Image: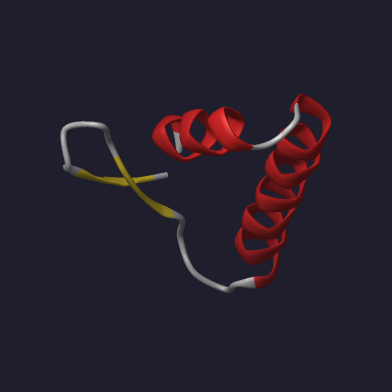
Length: 51
């Protein structure tokens, strides 16, 4: 996600980037809370992590 933020911040103003990041995190949180399954995340090394 850091690469996404970095690329966006090169092109767009700080406030727009912060709102876009908040929106993205809210969507992730909503998906995690509404699904009836365990969260599966991928680490920076590409390994699957079950939370």
